Length: 287
Image 1 (cartoon, rainbow, N blue to C red):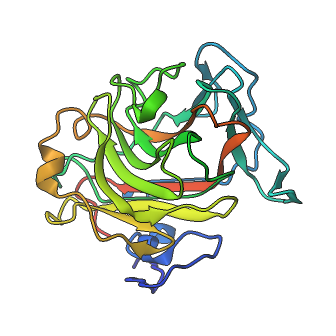
Image 2: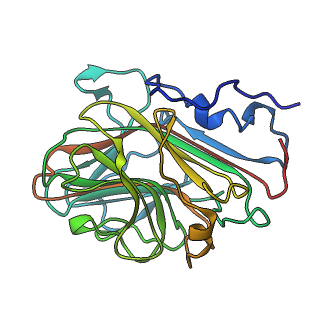
Image 3: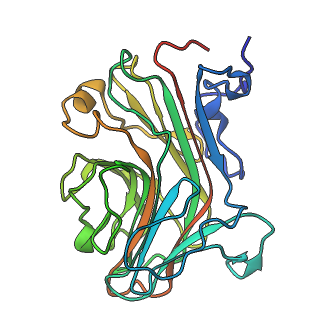
């Protein structure tokens, strides 16, 4: 018998630090046996992602690749909002228009095909924060992308004026350069612009942690992908029909992806990650 957290269907935001029961209650990860599925968690306590400014994407040898351009950085800070923390934090920073800091995790990916015959149920959540809420700041993306196809460089995965790179598909949460405190739920099917699922349902505040994520369930045709913030399900999801009608996003492996791209006011602007967690059942696995 699998062990599950006994909470679901949260209607009020949960601002605690750990993973949201409303997302993970159906996963029962603590009882997974070999062959049931794959689970990954990173709280960024191990200093394996500190990289210097580089001009080509670097394989860091620990399941991640990273890229910095200009004053873009991917580092481990020891404090958040001027307070010292004894927790792992990953920071991606920019300081001049056109800077980009980005990471992608390769290896065991997620598959979001929209079909139970080719992909199992999946879960994802990340705890994030940003430095400031101003106009002409920085575009932010946190979610999943085509790790094998996307080259991390000055123009990818993000670009100026809220574009994305057409090399690889993306799905997740985006803050636009002029988006202020709004987080969009988005996807891109190897296109140079995002398709918004919703532009009104998630928010972000300066120097305030928030948890974002999704649940993918190929058996739920009406809400094949449900998005969440701080444990509360957002009203608008993605149907299985929409997902299956795509060309690349639903057909290729997807790895965790996070990036920040600076506009003119994106000085000393950071995207912070406290932890990420994702999991997927094998096809046909029952928990």
